[in-house]
Length: 303
Image (cartoon, rainbow, N blue to C red; front, side, top):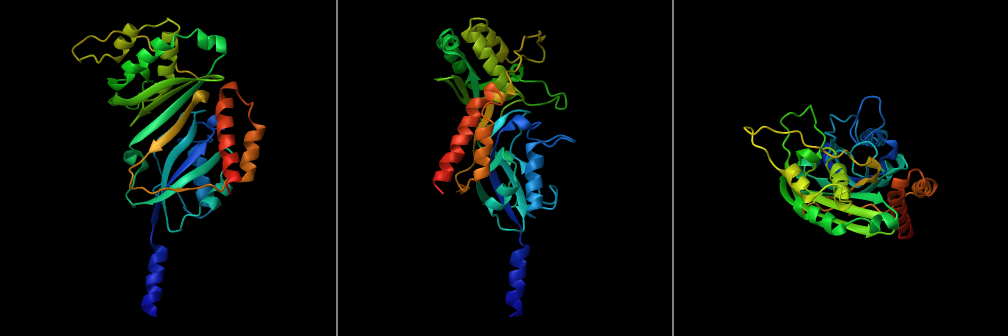
């Protein structure tokens, strides 16, 4: 009897590691990554995990993020990991999250699992609201030619913001796929890669729009993607400024097929109300607020 009791206690003390995928509207956050004195997505998630006694602190629970997004950027899927002695009940955590953050799905993973290094691909979408006349004035043949050039392995440093804290940052990446499509109220750019650089997508979209307006050309793109040797004198190359963060959403994260996710569909009614009241916060956010609002409404119907 004692041995059974001891075995039961051992099981209770055994740590589990969870990978959770969350969505969030980034409008009211200073980015996803924790920053002293600022409201961030990570801080809100960690706070909810503490309040529900899943973790006591981020260090002992090995809380880790699979990626980071800038201030104002949204996510349909963003990955986080933590270890806990409790079995995961997502509705408990979701109840303590703000109205603009929610759980999409979750999985139990090995104790050494890191969401950043284990993520195979990420997909970002950039929504640019445009009038029909603005769309008609764009040369989509040129834009698609530019996207075709961007696809593949290149040095994308001229499409990113320099991170002075990382002087030896690796900037040669592979763009797996990229495309553009027209929607009723604008256009959406889609990019898929294993990794992205700081502001890479927002600067790339700005360049592509200038390409479609004949303000830039494909020779400019070749120059921006050119990898200079160390012996070559590097001339100053004009880089486009980033488009607003509010149009960008981390759309999808792809993990190895052996990770079996459980979808979380028990959306809370008060979160639906949040979206219904905030559709008109910013013009560039309307598309994403509607998407997330409809997503939650659909889930509530299937409860």
